[in-house]
Amino acid sequence: MAMTVLLEVITPTGPVVKIAVDQVEAPSVNGEFGVLPGHLPLLAALEPGVVRYRTAGKLVAIAVGPGFAEAGMDRVTVLTDSAVEGSEVDVASVKSERDEVLKQLESVAADAGNDYEELLRKRRWLDAQLDAARESGKS
Image 1 (cartoon, rainbow, N blue to C red):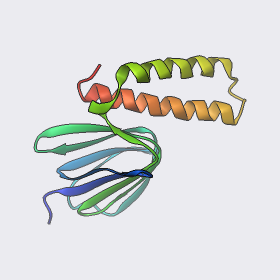
Image 2: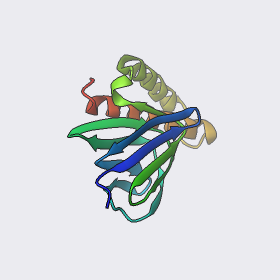
Image 3: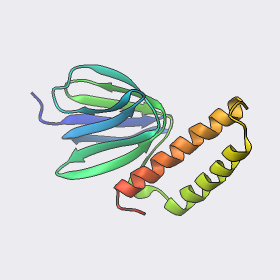
Image 4: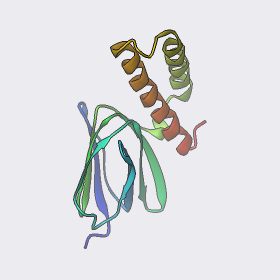
């Protein structure tokens, strides 16, 4: 049995991560799940959040948007519309953008349909980036 899992995080613009790791954690719509070498096959819908992986004793956090994850015995593939490593997040810019989205959410009624849902999606993506940055040691 393999001692590592190949993690691939892929966006429409191309691969973001391709690395052999010891373990992976990802945010599915039904809660977080973890994958170790030898994992049974799994297909999961992802919500915006943080994918964490551990390699050589180091924990790395990546913010991901909505998407899908497929796991198997020796591979985890994450297909998402957006991803950024926590250490690369521009915290000040993301906080500023999040504040603006929160103001817009206050002024848009919950029954406003698509506008409200789009603002919620944007806020979840911005929250994921801030969470990944915080887990990467950025404030």
